[in-house]
Every structure is written in C-alpha cells, then in structure tokens.
Image (cartoon, rainbow, N blue to C red; front, side, top):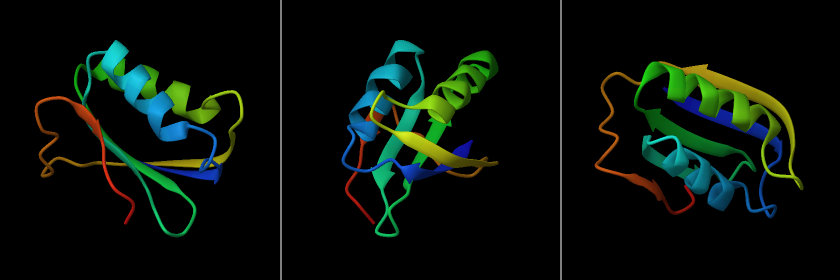
Length: 89
C-alpha cells in the first residue's frame, strides 16, 4: 500500500522512525518527504505487518502530530528488496 501522512511529520525524525519500524516488521518499500509538508511511504509485506505499520504511522514518533493518514492500493509499484529512505519530492 502507499500511504500519505499529514500533520507535524517533517523535522521530527518521522522518516528515520518509519525506516526503523518497517525494517522491524520485515517490510519492503520506501519513505520520503514531500514538498507540501507531508510524508509518503510504500509498504509491502505480510498483510498483518502492513496493517501494523499503518497503525504505527497513525501515531508516529513522539514529536510528531499526525492529523491524517490516507491509504491507497499500490499493486503496480515495485517495493525493492529492502526498506529505504528516499529524497524529498
């Protein structure tokens, strides 16, 4: 799935926190900041692990304040071989 996370999610280590949590859950994919102030991520793996990651992203790291999390199907996007942090777009 692809997720879009809005709120106070930049400058609070959200991407590094996402990489750590996604790797802990054995997920593949990526996370990146967007110029509009949101964070975008692609999660691929066991359905239970993906759902758990979605739950974690709704809270985020301690300094974050998530106001919205939107989830979209991402069947055609290649998640890669691991979970990585990508440059801002």
